[in-house]
Image 1 (spheres, helix red, strand yellow):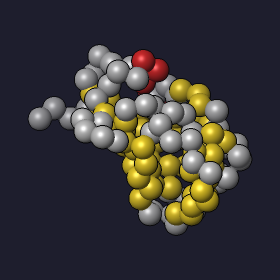
Image 2 (cartoon, one colour; image 1 turned 30 degrees about the vertical axis):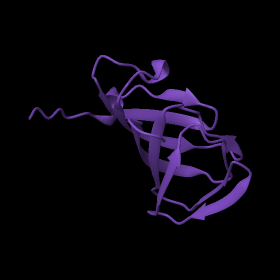
Image 3 (cartoon, helix red, strand yellow; image 1 turned 90 degrees about the vertical axis):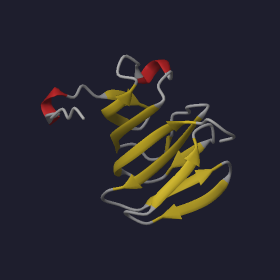
Image 4 (cartoon, helix red, strand yellow; image 1 turned 180 degrees about the vertical axis):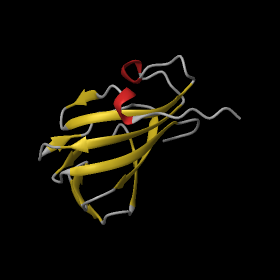
Length: 115
């Protein structure tokens, strides 16, 4: 297995409505975040704006963990709360509005069955 060391200063962040996202891994390697044509992606993000709306990725399942704060959201008009380090699993086509700031770590997987 090939392992690459990625230094913080080499990662070019992408903007989203609430902050920045930092891609750590994408598969296949020749795919791009903006195209939404990848099978698997791992990233870290900052949430600086509250409230903010999560970017939709139709056809993907996401798993998000807050690293420094709790996560307070409204998902499809229903309030939810997740503690720091608690896994928030969601269909990436859901409408999610966040009322938290902080840093997260997340995984995206293309749905092979119903999302």
